[in-house]
Length: 145
Image (tube, rainbow, N blue to C red):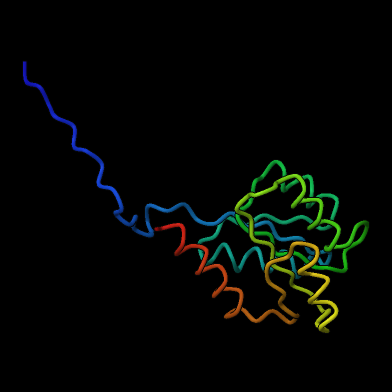
């Protein structure tokens, strides 16, 4: 009988991009055309994108979907993006979740409220795709380490 030796795993080796699953992104936007267009765009960039259209559903979906990133409008029906972010952070304390506001509200006070609600990045509409892609790329590259 031939005995095969198992190779010991190489520690500290970086995984290739193809070995890393795509980021799971939850888009929360009440403008359905904008939300669906962003989903299509992110899927074309090989992300795993999902869409909801209000804050309450975002909170529920974050609990079940466990996204890596949430791209969220602030002015949502029902609960605001600020409140949704607070609730999502409360249900996932210490989790590795990045929340990106994508909103028409761009004043300094709006940015401060975003930070206080647990939002990591604040982008102003219309979408600057390069800025969003830079955020997503930084998260993807940290996953390969």
